[in-house]
Length: 291
Image (cartoon, rainbow, N blue to C red; front, side):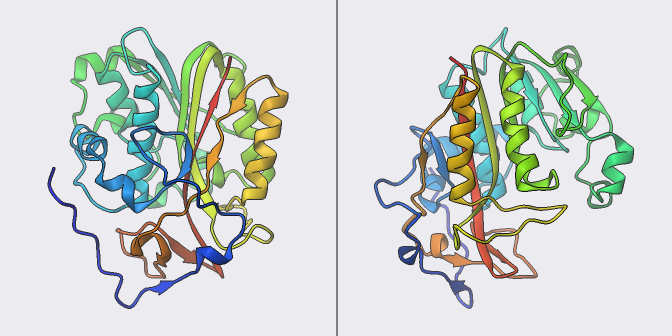
């Protein structure tokens, strides 16, 4: 494996996770045995990270957004979901490469995103993050065109109002999407409601924003919320109430310089933590299973 050189942390500020009692120090999260967990620098050194980057046609780099793609892929692969005859449902897919990746491995995929008019009103089209047609999801050529057209469908879908016909999927996923639904409540409601799309034995894997600096106050705006441990603990209870299970969350924040140093505006593309307002946050991956 090529040694990944971390970006310099010179000039970056550092927070003190040891002062945050809601974070844990039990064990470092690993991609090798993924559960619900935080993005940490050690996971970028694992062989599976480089392997998925190559498959996704991404350069290997320290990027929490790239970690989210790799994490979703690794979770689904380890749970036997990325194979022929499996059906997957993606929410808020934008122009991400995951639908093409899953189709190339044999899955049938329904990829969804906001209706174009709703996306325009939310400014997603202005940042070129919104998909408007099927070809947007295979721009890297990860899946051959004929196979892609056979295995992938694209449709408009509002994550706050999931259509009743979206059922009987083996897996569902989203990558940094449900923090943009208007409120903490809307985000948690989506997570719980989306479990009805799974068949028995199905797996849901979603990534979102996690507040490293407070378990009390946080960011809650119409276009971005940052979830606290308090919210994740509440989510686990709600998931259990609908007969599913949120896998226990490893809240270990990591031990390397990139795990404690955070980026500030204007942001660099390579960071694992960043600051907005007075909060430092990162990515978290959450896995729910339907017995």
